[in-house]
Amino acid sequence: MKLIGVDVGFSEKRKTTGIACLDDDKLYCSKAGTSWESRKTLIPSGFQPKLIALDGPLLPQGVDELVHRQCEFAFIDAPFSSRCKPGLSHWGTGLKLRRAAEQAAAQFGQLLGGSFPSAAETFVRREGPIVEAFPNAFLGVLLSEEDFQFAPKPSRGKRFDWLYERAVGNRRLESILAESSGLPSEFWRRLNTEKDHDLRASLICLLTAAFAAKGTASIIGEAESGWFWLPPSSVWQSWARDGLRSSAAKRGLNLAAT
Picture 1 (tube, helix red, strand yellow):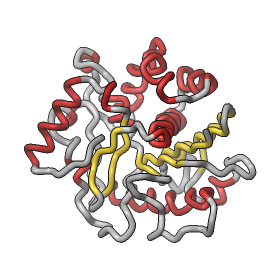
Picture 2 (spheres, helix red, strand yellow):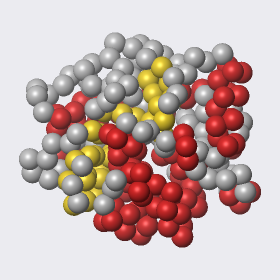
Picture 3 (spheres, one colour):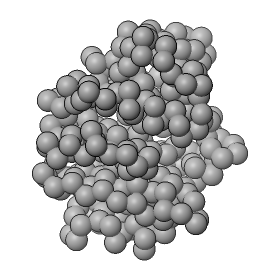
Picture 4 (cartoon, helix red, strand yellow):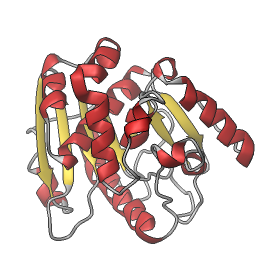
């Protein structure tokens, strides 16, 4: 498999973009700034991925930049609100991240072949080849209700690392997903030992890309505002499946989920 997972950072001063490239059985992980010059030097020469997963709000072509996203609202109610709640991306910092994700999709989309895509042609559609990862929810839906009894209060950034350590500890994530993901042992070795926040996020994005490429990811959302790609529904904890159904019904959301 040839895949890329990108944790979209938008700091102008620090390297906060985590990039994980899988070239068959070789894994490359590194951090970059926001410019394409900084990012493209970390991509293996001649590398052309099948699919790219970005941790940032992605809109299908032609959608209003300020649209309220159903996939985000589906995860802001209980039980997700205290476990893996997303930030809303139609205002404030979330809107800045939305714009940074659009830029990143246009940049990394160049690797897919063909001409360099414009910001309005980022290939974001339900079948890929650029998909949106949501690392907090990817990990969160796999944890039991008992796990969350030990969870700290929600905090930007820190919540992801807690979810990561809880899910990855004792090789739990590997035992659940290794066989169905098709990823090589080098990926799991790195996942189980990585300490850097941004690189951890890029690895979960890469894991998201693997399931999206195999066609087994759960896809949550709709064409008017985009989708989240999450683990196969068969491995979700029951509280998460029930919570999504309840949230969709409460808000009258018409979600496409597989």
